[in-house]
Each structure stands twice: as structure tokens, then as C-alpha cells.
Length: 611
Image (cartoon, rainbow, N blue to C red; front, side, top):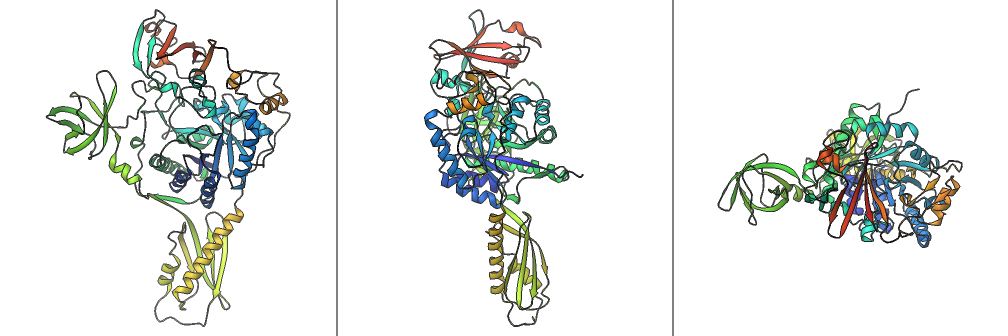
């Protein structure tokens, strides 16, 4: 039996409905967005009515809208979450991205559920369990290698979702408690204090400071744009861009770039892969990942452990290299440029202390740069552009249209003039009008009829073919235009009627959770979630630290990371260089002290802190 192509999805972030609409217009197959509460970005909430408006637009292209309800939930909030989910279902949302298993014990409509990356699905056994209890899609940890993704794919039948671009958390998602323990703000409640982006002093086991003021837990941004095919072959179906706090320009640029890359793959392998949504996006700019916010790039652990995963010298956007300083002439910087610069560009460089110094370009005259403020920069220094004014200005305009291709047949049936429309979504409609008294045209009419019927601007459609069977008869342009409008209205209505949402999978009540004992790392914050786990074989449950506050001064593991500071600094205990850093190691930043433990057999680092 011939296999049909696997559907793949480009999943874009949306801070609000307007950005979500831009993501769809620029090529996304789906967007994820936060609602009025309980999303893992407290600053990115949206009214349900606005999400409904986004959903209506997305469904025109068979694109989907997923809403993040992926914080842990307190007992007193269960009813509120239940009511929110019902409202989201009523405005057409396609799925919820959730962390808290209490959702599976709520009285809610049969909306599809996706397991958030906050579920910390590190093993095939856990992925299989989530599938068996009713999740339709599983978001994988960012840390997985291609081989580990294959193991996940072999264990489940549901689609796997994987991050491909954007900011990286240093800890396994869902297993970071640093913000809660040290600042009283829970990342599992959408209030991350970004402890990992702080500058730290590194102390060794002799109490000596061996590195000062470096961002030792801050990572570069992910960029897997060159690994999409290998990820597909490993089993990924949904490619997720991180960034629910990003602006519209970032989303437009990054989505357009990945849309092109995925289109290249589906055009090359049409028998193997196809996109989830319909319609072609035409953009007015050339997307470039270097031109959007980035701390430098890494593929993270996709192809195995890397050096230079960290962005230890700055947590700010570094941007693209654009030249090298050759000297100074008065107020001007002389430079050998690799790219043309413009007035208003934002530039930066690393000084002798390896601190990133940014400045605004007031004007540029050939290879002479005039900063808006005085800058102390030496010859030989590499210059980076982290704000391209012309590019940013372009992205603030209308930059894309997305259209559905339609085939049209114009014919006469008795006394009726008939248009048959069929689109790439599988919809087909027929509209009719009175043909009037037959009139033979004095001139050729086919081209004029094509022009009239092809005027689809603003409708979201484009005419791919016209089969005109009316010969040389004359029809007024007004008649043809009215018939075209009627047919397009019918096509819109047909798509709304035929659109089908995926429903929630049935829960296998006999499925057993892989672990028998749950501690605070499992984030069980309410009785409904506890009941869910007990019904699936768990015997002992310790509650989340958000509700069972640890004793003051008790040392806790607040991060579990695959990123290893020893490996990053060339002092790996297994690969050599261990003597460079005498254990135990600790990090200090203001009133924060973190102890570092290492499990070299599993290549894991544990960050410990006292509450």
C-alpha cells in the first residue's frame, strides 16, 4: 500500500493576535499563543475574543491555533482554568499546550491536548505514556540528539514537536526551580526571573575566583535551519520557533526564512513530506536570521555535545559581523566593511575585557563610521550589527500576502451563467447568474473575462487557471464581477463548514506512569493532578515547591542541565583539561550563590541553591 506524504508543520510564536496573523501570512502552518492566564509567559496574555479572530484567519489557510495553558495550576484555580478552556474551544482553538495533568481530570470539551516541553519528556517511556493518556502531540526537550529523537519516534504514533530556533533555557524545561527558590518567582507559573542570564563570578575548590563577571549559565540562541531534513528523517513533524515575547519584525523574518527552507524540502521530496496548511506566502524582503535578535547560534545537542554553546560574554543580541576596525580619524572610525551600513544602524563590539559595547551609528561615509556617542575602539576589533535600520523599517510595513490557488470554470447551463470554483483546500462550489439574452461579441472576449474574473485582490485567493467555455458571447463586466463575488463568498462558507478540528484522544486508564515516586521535580501542584498520577500507578507524591515551600536554608537542585560549564571552558572531566578547574565549583552573583555538581557518566550538570 502506497504511503501518503507525512504532514509537517512550521509552528510560530505569537505575543498577540496581530503577530499571530503576521505569522500565518508569512508562511506558518500553526501558531501558539497565550490566553488570559496560565500560559508560561505571564507578559504574553490575550483576550479569548482576540484569539478567536486569529483562529478565523488561520483556518482560511487550514492553519491551526494552539493556546498555551502550560503553567502548573493551584487547587483554587481549577475551576477558572476549566472555564477558560471552554471559552477557547468555543472560539475554535485547535489544541491546548499543557503541563499540568489536572487538565485531564477537568470537565472540558474534547479539545486536542499537546504535551508542553514543560512536561520534561526526556525518555521514550514517558513519551509513550503521554500518548496513551490522550495527548495528540508531544513537545520534545530541546536537549535531545537526533538519535534520541529517533528513539522517541519509535515509541509513539503521535506527531513530535521540536524547537528549531530561538532562545535557549539552560535547564531542562519544567525542571528549573532557580527563579522560585532564589527570587520567589516561579518559571512554572510564567514568571521566570532569568537567573541564567546574570553575570557570575566562578570560584574553584580553593576559594579562588577564576573568572569574574561572566554570563556562565547564559546560552546562545538555537538555529537548526540547516538540520531540518535530518530532523524530519529522525521523526520530527512540527518545527517550533521560540519567542512569544518577540515583536512582529522578528516573527516575520524568522518564519519567512523557515517557510522557505521547508518549502525547498517538500518540493524536493513531494512523495515524502507535505505542509499542514495551504496557500503560498509571497514576501517583499529577503529573510536573514542574522538580522533578528540573536546571541550567536548553536544547534545545541542535536548532533552531539558542542563547545561554544554558551554566550558567556553577553546575554544581549550580538547580530551579524559587518567589518573590522582599521583605525580612527578624529570622531570617525575607519573600518574595512563586509556589508554596507546606514545611518541609524545599531553596532557593537567586544572590548579588551570581552564586554559587549553597543553604539548607534550617526552617519556613514564610505568606510568612515561616525558614532552617535564617543566610542573607545581599537584597530583589529570586529564590528557587529545588531540593528539594521533599513531592514527593521521594511519589516514595519506590510511585507507579505498569502493566497489560496483556485481553479475556475465558466460555462453556460441553459439560461444560467455558471462559475465552478475548486481550491487547493479541497473545496468546490458553484455559483450561477441569469445569462440574459444571447449576445455575440464583436471582439474577442476571453482575455477581458479572465481579467474580470481574476480580480481577487484582498480575498485571499489567486486564480491559477480558467477554463472558459462560453465561446464568443458577450457578458457585462458587472455580471461577471457579481458572479465572481458570489462564488468567493460560497467558497469561504464551504471552508468554514468543512474545517474539522482534531479531537482529544481517548485516555487509556490502564497506562502506567514510568515512575512510582514523584518528587518536587514533577511539579504536582493540585489534588486533581495527584489523583491522575495515583490512578496511573504512582504510589508516592511530593508536591511542587510552589505549594510545599522547602525549609529555609535547605539545599535544592534548582537546575538540571545538559550544558556543562566544565566542557564549555575546556575543563572536561572525561575529555581532558580537568586540572584547569579544581572542584568543587560555585557561582556567585550579588546575594546569589550556586553550587555546581557534575554527573560525568550521564554528562549532566546540576545547579544547587539554598532557599
